[in-house]
Length: 424
Image 1: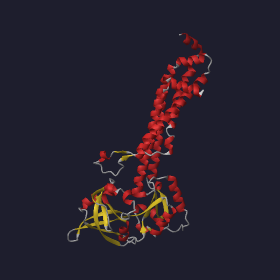
Image 2: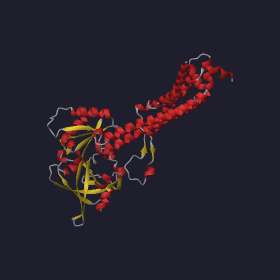
Image 3: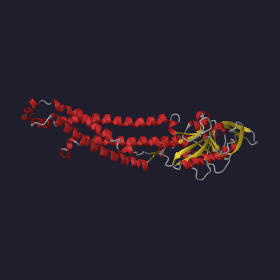
Image 4: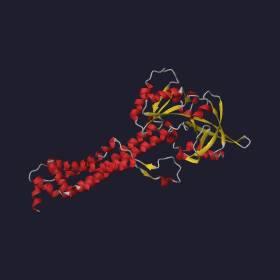
């Protein structure tokens, strides 16, 4: 039966070509958009992780509770030992200590007296270690507007907007006034080597980026850091391994009454990130549903036209004694075959485009020359195991739904009229 129906589909292209093309096109678009959303999700997570959150984050329990206030008095101590333990326990991850701090930046005049002052939101990262990937994660070279990156201790980067407001140029001296880990006043002289623009308003107003060791010295945080960010080696965030790492770390024997015990949390536990990741997952489901509905309507109409064209064929088959249910089922089988064939072709084409976007991408940086947003300039997709099967959902269901609705006309045929139709 299957072989017979398949021959009919291949030989009579007038009844199969249009539905086949509709299914192939719909599945192609479904797979391509699904992979694009996964690629966009990956880029969104990458930027959030690299700038602030990491794939996982280690901090003290007390710091976690008041993280919005940046309480460096609750920071991690014994940093070198903790980082060594993390690298030994999780060798497939990269660990980067960071310090987020606030202070007042003072710009002196020729006499050494205050010329301008302004608030600064500082970030201490490892800029000077040759093997450090922190400058790459923060995309400092891409964000650089004037000057150069720090190459020695005592050098910092400022946001370009802040540098213009304070009228400080690369090469000039500034003084950071802040609070040490113990709560006393801290003052440290720095040389501005360059200015950066991230396209993020909060950072572009007051950003100050310095080497981690300089910040530790300035804030009296010897062998301490506010948090340690963990990144998967391939740069791709995966929820299950992240959850496993968190459970393993937090299950260590620790004193539950110690507010300074280190704890770990995932990227998804950060405020707002879980919502955004769930929204992107929902968007993928919406795309599949929309294409399923659209293709079902189109194929329903195509099925109605095909049923009218095959009006005589169905009448003859009923006249020679074939059961209406059997005719209806063979029509469903035909649509199933068309759906499978169209889904295979559409999936192959969609995956081919997605693999190209994943490997090569489309660089549209030329269109963003006057845009200062820190955003991906290469359009990329991401192929996941679900990408291989996601197209079959609308591809097969749409053809079945369309044919099932259109084929109901078969049951409206009156046997008494069949011979009269044949005579005419």
